[in-house]
Image (tube, rainbow, N blue to C red; front, side, top):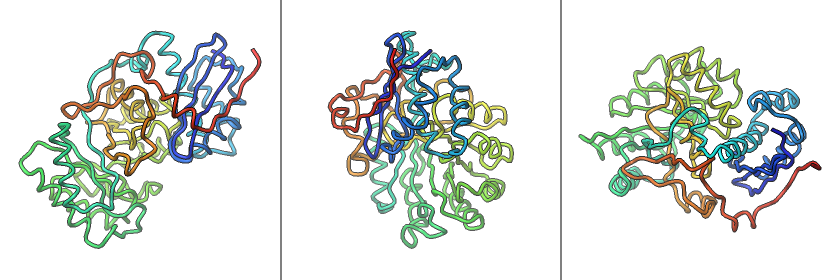
Length: 369
């Protein structure tokens, strides 16, 4: 495979990538959300020059090559940019084969249990519980995640007493029902406080405790994991394979949560899944918005043997994520009886909205045929 052009269509929140190979075949992918206009610059300056016109036989090896060439920039932005290229290649391959990406990954189309994932901390416990009950009735969700503490909060709550109130409020809202409850602390606590909060979670039947300590402090997270019976989870922010190897080797968490877009694509996410499988750990990826990241994650979950119990499904609408509006011609996200579905449409099976593209920042890197 040789690519002759890489195009990006971006704004500050989300960016899409279109690739074209020597035969004229095309594929669509997505760069990671947030500051995607900056990521587009990185893609054209630090990814495209190592890619265009180069014979690519092994995409995973090619991404490693890019990182080697850009070894002075080992952080998130290069990975975020590589993800746009890599996911577009998967789409092109799927379309050429007439198969959904999930089949190329060794899986099958089908349904996936979803959990309703709340991003809000500026919501009262009572209102959050009422919102969850409404979603259960309307879409059949049987799993919900809510926020505790304050994001990277250095031990402080969003407001005093909120965590101590919201945990039993949500638990009591689903008392005697077969509903899974999850929480996300977003790197709020030092270990001792995290353990104290964790014991309260256990007492209220919460089953998933995400990122209790600063995510970069693996030993702190491991201390919490070892002290509690509840599943401690994490990894969404991490994009470097050596960090993932260490996280898994020291069993810092019970469940690993790579984000396809932060990782740099499907192949690197699958590598994390294989590392976790060898260690006997499940994978419940992070995918906290309804851009293409959730669709990519759906295909991964239908393809890996150690898939976690559910798919993260963002429930915030235009009030929280106004940039999610009108991204696609065909909506890939329909929840029925609490489940999403991977279809058998070729590639990603989705069309980006031409009207959205027309309003975006357009850039192209290309070579002569």
